Length: 85
Image (tube, rainbow, N blue to C red):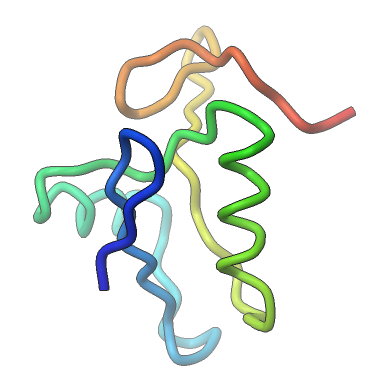
């Protein structure tokens, strides 16, 4: 099911268990099939929404952050929000 948040359309695709998990590259390929990319978390409100969606799920998820020379999102936007120490 597609979810709308602000200017974004999100598809939460969770594996049934750890053995069905995907690599980062495979997850990005799935997003590309839908003409999208892994999520770029651009502010604390968006992060809170995604955190809420993931409550109760124990599987890991991928986000669209890349570290090639500089940190940037797979959608090409620069990193303007971080939530790590």
